[in-house]
Length: 244
Image (tube, rainbow, N blue to C red; front, side, top):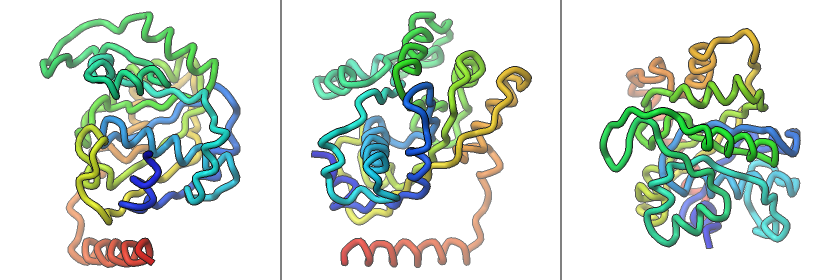
């Protein structure tokens, strides 16, 4: 049902998917910027399984879903996963639903992390792969939540950064409805981060995450006009190739 959202209505451009096949079966944490509630993580499920079926940087031939890797989990806000039937189904098939410590029901809050939430993430890492969005929001360039750095320092997972783009333009905020067709979507899977779990501080790990998922304030720069025009030309070329 979801395949055409990334290879039909739009064309997902993938880079670095061969990295997926080099990862161990468990204790892998994927960190990514966030653009929609559900489309981002569903795209990752497609890309991960296509790569494990020996496809490099493409999700052609949906046959890779006949024998999928099922121990893939993702961290999501509990209130998001309980809002409607479909989110509840998605929660059942792989979410680690946690209570956000900084925001609830549209209001700013200040509460402590529940140990049960940390334990759930630990169990998921012991069983397989976990996807998390360390900003905790779909708004770009928001601060990285330190909880992700604490989890990295405590459980020492292999940390794989992912950078996505185009999902905000092609889907609604929930990622359930196709908002616009022929949009260039991209997903870059980067090499695992080199982390000194014992000696690096929480703040150092947070900064490393910011750069890895390209959400550090330094990425907020004024892009020269010639770069914008070149990017637009590339977008039109990819759009033409997708149609042909």
